[in-house]
Image 1: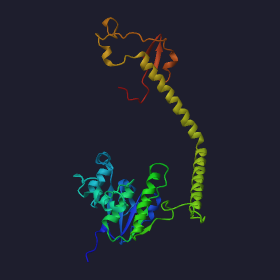
Image 2: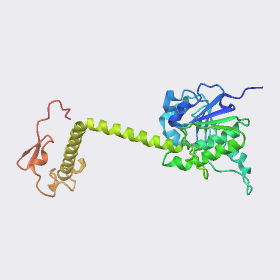
Image 3: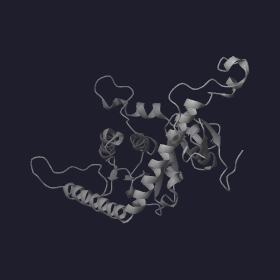
Image 4: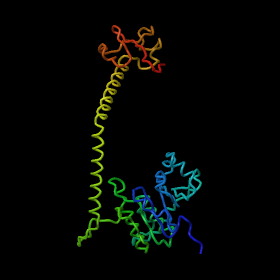
Length: 306
């Protein structure tokens, strides 16, 4: 019997971006390793992959120089919304076929099933579609624990893991992963360990914040000096901006003799409106005040003056 392709073995490990990706079976030849999107940027922490997914629109991929360059160079199969001429190993992701395969799960109006809220959900469904004799489906680096977009995507990923289990596929998620976890069993009150996990997470971040606070305290003098320098620089910038706007002609064209801003066409700018410019406004700007006019002072040593 012909062995399956490297990327479609009976054991599939989907690898995402969170820390548990380090637990993936990169060295186990029985597994196909599937990656996605910009995971390649993590370098040696993802030492092997056999199939790659990027289901974002083509224009977003093309706008990412690093991603485009990597997709051009990779020799592994690359599944995109559409095959791309610049990426020689790219193929069209069979979204319609995947939808149709699971379309008969509803009693009413069977057709195309459309519950896919993330790339990970598509990948899990694709594993069931592309590997009919799939034995194991593992998730690493896929916590769906964040407070923003991933939270609403989590239920869909868990749904597809449930479909896999219903088909007899063995599913694995690390203990540190939030998928398929709850705080307790309803009615029986059995603690699942998630409470302890969350408590540890709070303690870890509390300790990390304390370490950061210690470092900030150790550098408080430097921070104070830099803050003071920043405020002074901002003040000088604002002063220079005020001088420029109040006393300089808006653009070089206004220096032409026939420009309406020129007094009588004699090449001299009209006086700026507003109060007389105080001498202290020129401090720190390399300008010296002579009478009511400002003239350039000597250029500081080492300045590249043009």
